[in-house]
Image (spheres, rainbow, N blue to C red):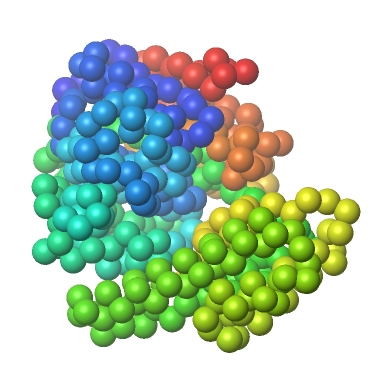
Length: 370
């Protein structure tokens, strides 16, 4: 890879905001336009897709930025051809996708016109984002490496070095919640034991025989489940009449799930009778629960400074490649990275990066939003 005298870097608040800066670097020729590797340190994969966004939107810079959110900003860059390989380097407490080398196709779904993936990981299936490769067009191949620095197999690190040697450059992407993360939904109506109850309601049977037909059946069951639960909570929000709760429960076909959902609503109303309940947020919280759920691990400053940061620093030094660009997300406004520690973590990260790389041109874009 060509050496740079200065590496462009940006710090944003919400992770999807990095996309606008990447587009600017593409346009200014500070970053290769195609075939990049994304080295992604994060407690979350961020590998979902906007479920209803037309595939062509990825080629509309401003339309794309308006359609993205923190969990789905990365794969659209793959469909556009900018990124061809991703290394999700997860902390030890994050297990949303199993470790390994995953190669799959991403493309335009011929029926819906949206972007879908052929990857059969439950992370994608639970969000209804899987489609057989035969149903995709204008496909791009994506190589995804998943591993943690604590127990990584040397094979994964060697594979990453192989990818860096073959691709046109790499983006070093760091979410500060990699070092310490919260599940903000745990604090949603805790007196009603909400999150635990949601886990039982949004659970689904993901077993299948591995065939495309089996996968379609799993997705169909999941689609029906989420559709019914969305309709149920939407109807609760509109009615706001307690007497109708049992009647609205009939919107849920599964008897056990219906009983649990009605019980949850009753518990929330009894526990929070003096405030207006945000039923939409409750459904959104439920949708985050799949086989693993969102990670929650609030680290001490000692562990951050003395264990996690040195591990990352050593890894980057041993990687042997200077990134073409660096993107950093604070993720504190939405409570994924603890607000009390985010500045401390940021200082640790910047101190390490400035020690590893000779010159970094850092833009604190998040300050411009204040």
